[in-house]
Length: 241
Length: 372
Image (cartoon, rainbow over all chains, first blue to last red; front, side, top):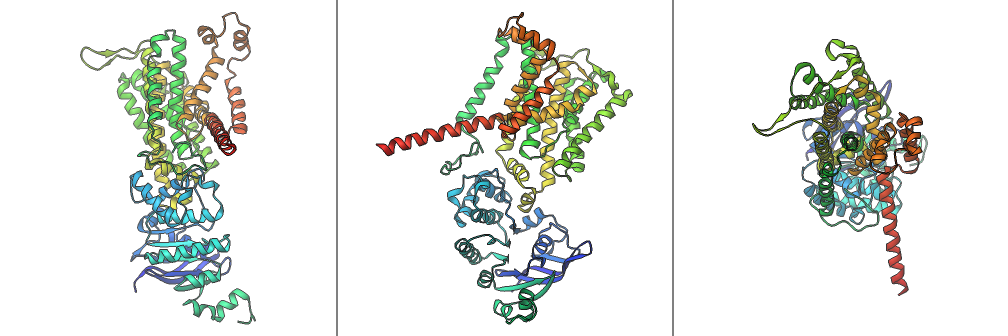
């Protein structure tokens, strides 16, 4: 299978601190890759390196065969890689529909077309009833959905989801899981950062585990749960697996 | 995007989200009414008021593009106002080049300056950007003040006359008296307000507002913040320079403090804050309020001329003796009031009142139905 994204020996240093060090893995086209690790493992930093917010200190990021480190976030998005934010970033004083239209306008100059595309995305995340509400007034569950609809509107080929289930109740989480699986059926490749182990096991085709900025393990979900290093990283030395 | 009332069902489809025939008709009617004002108002001091209001509308609306929509609070727009005024006046008075060419060059200069300033200052965010914008305008003011051979420095430039604008061999416009400036400033105000409308209802406006709301989120959605902030600033600077040029030609005298002073920059910001920032109508309202206030305090005679007071009235005497040149004090008080009680400006206050009234009426109707 072809890799849509290749992370090759990526390191990111902040001063002397290595937030990521020598991380390598590939994301296969059409699959969901789960990215897990304890707090501070460098998951979000890696997302920032991939999407152009930080230039990697070392290593290469290759998307669709093109080296993209050094590109700005807007250029990365234009190439077809979009990300959501762990801390949601609604455009508060604009309506839900306008928020999604901002994403859709990447691929068109026509507000009319953008509006159609945006409404379609709102239907996909089941938020169309709130189209005319101000984004700043939405509860957290709906803000997360808005975040997803907005990036979907940019028509990505690869979606990076940074803890879209954080802060949601179980019913809301289930909705998001269904949504991610639906998007996979539509052929969208996704990288998912998540803390909820049950969710990540259900979603992922492969899992990469980060710990202290380094890649600790990589494999199928069932391999990861029985991996001794992973268990140690999560539960500490001497824990009974 | 117009008024958004949470709780409404999705709005019906419109080609431009902001376009409705009643609104458009309202604007056309208002412009037509303003255009016939000189037929009824003959007194120069009253026409002067209108001209100052139109220039303020143009300035406020021009600032609104970068400050209101793109959310970059430039407090250095006097740089563009000044460069507009100085380019036109210097070309006309010192080099005998007609202001029609001077105006074009003034706008071009301002746009070029804005690109340079933008490249330097748009790396900064929030209060740092504000401080940098003030600094840039002050540098320009001091340069104009001290480069006497080129700009005549503190002496300023006094205009001896404006050549008539020859449109055809037989038809030409003489720029004598207030009337030509009334129409020139009205036209400018209409053009800048229309530009605001276009910005608000195109992709550009969506991108500007996305940057205002959250620059990092906008960046991740494929928007280049630096590019779009520069576009917003260029539009804003061009119109500001146009207003500056017209101001110079109308007043016929400029000096560095008058057209590049901090008061010019602050005035443009206040028009928007008081009227309603990031809206089309807000700067128009703000311009009326602030201009009437400052012109009244400067010279309250117009109140006599419109018949509100007679010339012996103690109020007129009080304003003249005690309150002349206190307009800055009143600006300050007004800003405090607006920030405390109407953070979305006068327009926001008005919209909230309408929304509340509508809700009350709906509730009234609903409860009446329930009882029946």
